[in-house]
Image (cartoon, rainbow, N blue to C red; front, side):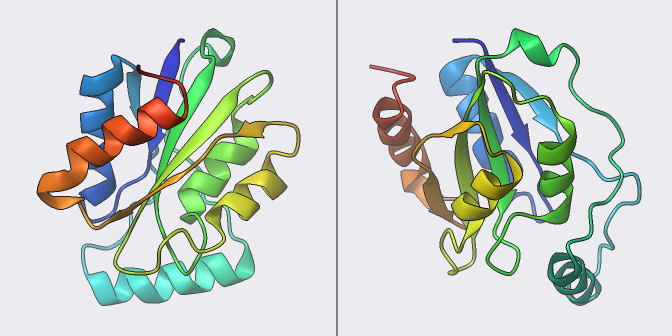
Length: 159
């Protein structure tokens, strides 16, 4: 399968998981970046993120991956922001052509689990098959690779 690993990361946890997935699958890594970066100050970003998710805000993105038709599956990474995907990820989902693709979500969090991220993805991408998701606490710790391999087996990406 031709795999795109698209992710947004604020603290670095989601980026670290995305990099591990790239090593495990050989997929193409793509970082989702808003044109206006979030503040380095966590409290400022938390207030902004809360407001954006509540209002359904979709920030402009710096770029999109080339040749969307090339990929069969998108491993989609997001931190859990107030029980949903981060606004840049929602922008990506609305703008990227997901026709004939499968999405498998990896969601990092500080204790909130998946929230309603899966349901929100299904709402944004109505005609896309959403595979089983994985919930990863922060950076997954020393057990992250094992968890990722098990998840990739479950969604049929590795044996």
